[in-house]
Image 1 (tube, rainbow, N blue to C red):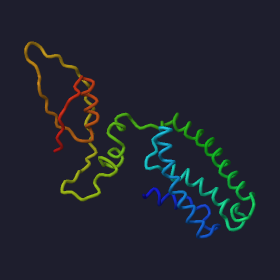
Image 2 (image 1 turned 180 degrees about the horizontal axis):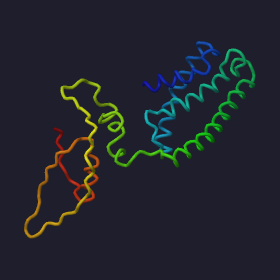
Image 3 (image 1 turned 90 degrees about the vertical axis):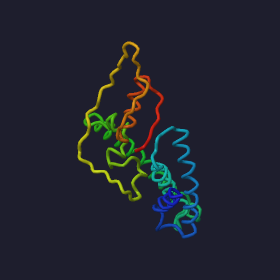
Length: 205
């Protein structure tokens, strides 16, 4: 629902001073339909991870709004009797900006990738960037006040290498209890999986 609101807002931005109120409503409604189709296409068909539909909202609906300015503008719009000149100008602008940004950002990101890299560390991926950047278990956590607070001391425990231990004689471990911080849980699961331990019972304390 919120992405629909944003889609309408973004789509009308380009032509807000050029179209009528009725046209603004039409552009907003069309953008709200387009955002759903675009998010599904990018996520499900292209298999691109686009958090919160940002590309769909700003890229797709922004482009749609620019072209709609050429269609609905009171003066010069294709659907208001102004001919095709303004519409062609708007489409040319979209294509020009797309080509420029595509070339410029390929160069800039290519240089950044070689100098400092574009990916975070694997440990940060496992823990999640919400924890690494904001100290939250997820982007939806900690919105409600709780009695327990977390104080970040800046200390990070050193990584413990995975060691395979072979039991000797008749002694056999049948149960292991591990107490760990929640932000290290994914790393723990990965380590246990490497040891061949795939079953566990988790209790949040």
